[in-house]
Image (spheres, helix red, strand yellow):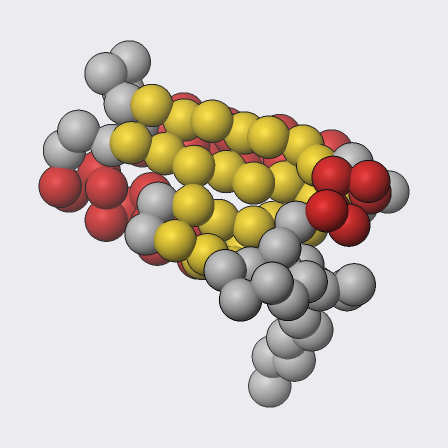
Length: 94
């Protein structure tokens, strides 16, 4: 079953920062410069964590937060609107 996650990072090196940002864009939606919203199952999350471990070092920071349904329903954008979609965006690859 897929769950929602917020992943934020603080990467100390410009080259690694670009690599992590590009990787994250393939897994979720950017909501701030270093903050992404992802809809993943456990296997997808573990695969992403493995890939992140290959392109980060001990000096870099990474925070992965799982969100429950109640937390998601309470999230709001700056203008007061609901900040979270009911379903993630669907992508069609041609």
